Each structure stands twice: as C-alpha cells, then as structure tokens.
Length: 244
Image (cartoon, rainbow, N blue to C red):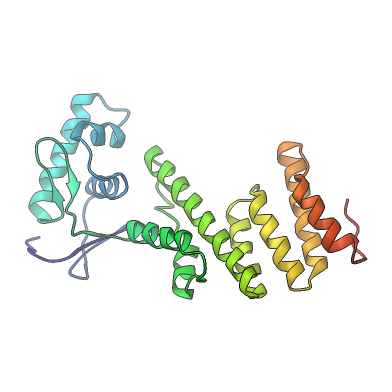
C-alpha cells in the first residue's frame, strides 16, 4: 500500500484498528501484534519485542518472525514504524488512542477542581483494551489501564460530591464498582453519593453488597470507615434497613 506522508492512527480500545489518512487499513495478524506492542510498550530492542510476541518460540525463530513482520510493515505501511539497528518504535507522529486516553486521565488526576467532561466519561466507559486478545503483555497493559480508569472514575466522583452533583457522583462511582467488585474505595464513594442524595436505603444496599462480596471472596468484613459511615448515615437517621 503506497501511501506516503499521511497521518497514521492506531486504535486499540474496543478492538484493533489501523487508519491512514482516515482510511481503514487491513493488515495481517502478526503485523497487528507488532504494531500493538510498539503502541503499548514504546520503543524497545528488537529482541525484547520478539520475545514478548513469540514467548514459546526459540529466539532465532522469534527474531525471524519479527524480521518478516517488520519487512512487510516497512514496505506496505511506510511512515508507520522506525526500525534503526538498535531498536524499533512507532513513528512519533502516529496517533494512538491509548496514549491520548492516558494523557486525558493524567489531566483529570492533576486538575483538582474541574469535573471531567461528558466526552471523557464516555471514553472512559468504553476503554476496554483489546478485549479479545489474551497475550500476557496485553493483559498486563489492560490491567494497568483499568487501574488508571478506576482512579479517574473515583477522582470524578469525589469532585461531583464536592460540587453537589450527587446523581452524577452515583453514576460515576457505580461504574468504578462495576469495574472492581473488591475495591472498597469505590464502594465508599458510592455509599457517600447515595447518602448525600438522601437515598439511605440504597446506601445500605451498597454496604450489604460489599459485605457479602468480601465475606464470600476473602472471608473478611468491610474496613472501619464503612462502619463509621453506616453509623453516621444510617443508624443515627433511623432508616429501617436490616444489615446482616
């Protein structure tokens, strides 16, 4: 495909996609994996990439697979990859959706007073990294991105509580709980949001769900801050909810 001096774009959220000048480009699975690895891991020595992509192959075969894939990419997708002798990387001008999302998350975590835009929240909700890929290096990067997404959800929920947008705080905290069923900090924010909105029974249900989950999965009870929140928000207000 002889397309020169055009903008390449790699999309890894939701599913694999490659675009050149806004036009979808079809390439082989091996080439997809090389490009995805460089998009997620950055510049690396050739041997390091070969071992990650073909961990069960002898070094010579893994290196040969990588050379063959690079040859095709360099000739069929010019301007996408830079491959000097000491390593390989994507051209710095390549747009990568994961990189852009992480930059947006960093901004959310850095700026303490602004609530995230609706566009970013939509992006965070749909940001599953290559969900159909099971390679170890993909799983690790997916977990790292999910952790960053959780931090962003929690930061936004706290800001919504601060400015009195309790309904949105409930929505965002619910997304965090849905991503991590054992994450106490997410449940705590969801309970706070329900209590702030005057929904004490819903807060009690959240507490009960956490208590049941922790007991079943880990054999432990919620930590002390939850008991304190329950005492302040539920028992003292006399809501008629039985907590097992």
